[in-house]
Image (cartoon, rainbow, N blue to C red; front, side):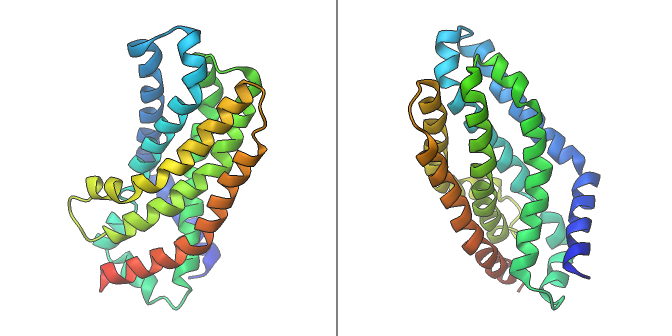
Length: 220
């Protein structure tokens, strides 16, 4: 096995399990659609809240996709094979996050024009929202995969994963929604985007190593 073949196999596995990704995207759309249908459909309410609504829905969809990412690998022994493969386990975990991010976030971005129109998001803030998702969501995956690795050997772990990682998601949501709101009122937002990028790069540095340690603890 090589790193390239591992990445290809991860993408192929995610394609075969595409129902998980489809469920996450449908969940994301339904959560966003609940606000104009069940809360308030006026543009005066939806437009200022649109960034927060989309980001909270994205966080929930990502949690749904990442919670059981190691479950089947743990049950069929694939995780043990990765540990003894002789390849760098942190690098394999990094490739796993890359495959998962591409499979989940790209479909979310594709439906964003429709949802932005539904939430009356101003056109000037649309691309800022896209940029926050591009630079902020990698941090969500890097943090989330640590919690998923820690609970890989547990049977009922969904709630535990959320309790472990949700507090770390709050700063990302705050910076992302603040950037969208700043763009809506014409204020500078580049600093907020820089903070999101910095958090993603920081999580890129430590997450693969912590995930590898958690995987070794789970399979031992």
